[in-house]
Length: 168
Ligand code: NI
Image: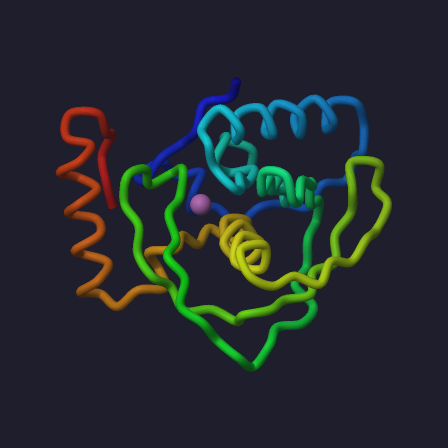
């Protein structure tokens, strides 16, 4: 089990470096990320959320899609944009609608360095975009209006009173 970093931790705001080495250490990390994700009952988990500033994330939509995305690149997005309620393991306990493209095409590498392409829609498309944001230091609250963001952060602070580190 890995520690999940939360809002206020600097690593969540870093721009991540590409993964260069596809070795056993990477496989160990990815396995640990999948375990941590399942334990936290989440859908996706990105490197910086576990303190690793590398371009990778894992997605596990139970029973449907389980995959590690190394050095992902979103190469196509649909014109159609849709709202979808998002939460984040790094901002636990709060959710808010975020508007994003309904469909995306992502190119990435697996743990062996082999390239693959995924055409995604629905929850998977949403998770890919949310996790990919993490690799650029972006959180879902950054997509909200200032007013909405303040509201979500206040709710988060109230909910996690005494449990959180410094915020903002
Ligand atoms: Ni997140």
